[in-house]
Length: 176
Image (cartoon, rainbow, N blue to C red; front, side):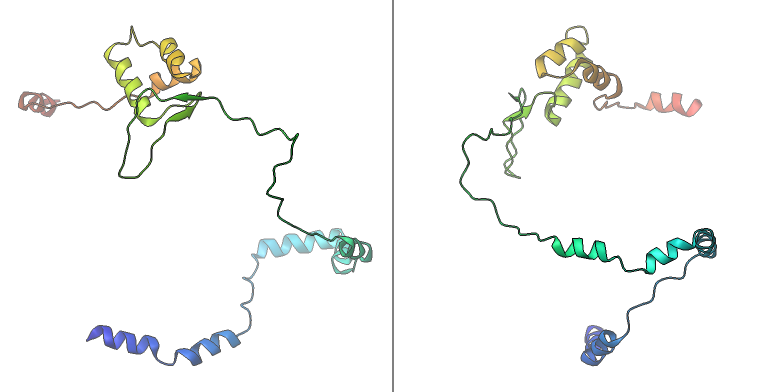
């Protein structure tokens, strides 16, 4: 019942309300801040020639604008010979893949210097398990990364740690 009442009020006299809104004058600009008005008046009083330039019609500029003619067309679909194709980034195959058929996205190659989320998690996990074998230099070489970026990743990012708190740990925490 309430929806019918709301719909009746919403649809009441829609056409005349629309004509009234269309017939209104454009909304006026918001009033300028008093400090802005004072700054503009001070600038115009110091430089009276600026106000003349604003109000004066510049015929030379208008004639130049009339000379400009822009004609836009789509480029021909035929590939012109002799024009080099843009350089394709060096790609490397993925080390660890996670195919997700739910989204229909499969990535087979990644640009050198970048890693996927799955690779990043495996890198961090491997480094955490055995940091002496998975050093920053080995990871950088294996995944075609910059050594500086690899060191930063290993220093500032860590994989998730799951810590199980036992009742005795809870007591120790409560005592502190």
